[in-house]
Amino acid sequence: MILRQLGKSGLAVAPLAFGGNVLGWTADEATSFKVLDAFVGAGFNLIDTADVYSRWIPGHQGGESETILGKWMKTRGNRSRVIIATKVGIEMAEGEQGLSRAYILRAVERSLTRLQTDYIDLYQSHRDDPLTPFEETLGAYGDLIRAGKVRAIGASNFTAERLSAALAASAAHGLPRYETLQPLYNLYDRSSFEGELADLCRREQLGVISYFSLASGFLTGKYRTEADLAGRARAYRVKDMMNPRGARILRALDEVARELRGTPAQVALAWLIARGVTAPIASATSIEQMQELAGSVRLELGDDALTKLDEASAA
Image (tube, rainbow, N blue to C red; front, side):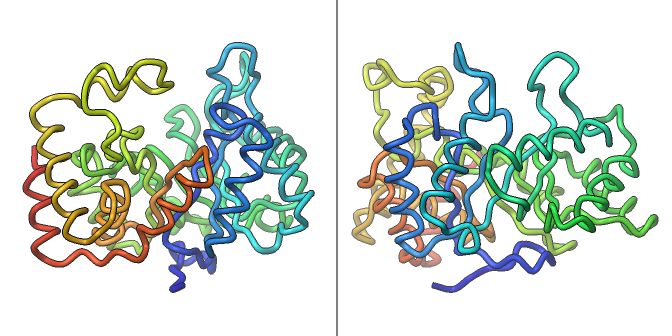
């Protein structure tokens, strides 16, 4: 499998990332181990998580995903064969949030403990913190890199203006720079990334790791009517996509999938790869789902297919 570079970090990844938000949420520990085994067994290596996963579930404290991932790596003895990306910044408890130096240095130790590792391959700012100067945040990351606790850093949910300013601060002060961006990007959600932000990533040679790559499952085609949403964890988000544009996108995915003998989910991921995304993030809660997602990297979308999908998803 052809590997792709995450910016200038030296980290080489296969063109699909596993979304660890499901670990300890919609996938229990035993199921998590099985899908992670299937993921690496298919030749992939980038696993994305965050300290806050899955704090939004009643009774959870955050850290559940990192904890399961740490147990899996310890059990399998495969830490050196996977690339672990986690995040910091979203509130974990009262006063425990943001990108200040003091908080980053506390949070990284907690993540390392949960992950049962002494280093994080890609440590990402989960969201922008306008209250903390870039120099303070990047300086803290620099110390972690020099200590061998972090290999590279990335940003998530940054605007083009703020990401550009962060990169400028890195250059001006000799500090580590963000090597990746994790944006919301998929066939349904295009406007926040395409244009200025995508242009900046290309110009600065940043790796792009898109989240919600399948639009919370909508682009798999399994949600066609409101009745399909019953009992689904992300029904609140998918419901808003059930409109004429959403139906148009699903029809185009169905047509291209038939032509290529694939599935709508595989086509949706292949579209992101064709659009220059380094490694789209996708989650699975069964081996069957994981096998389906893995097939996306074998699909090659021709110009006609790309045009059909682009036009169907145009705002």
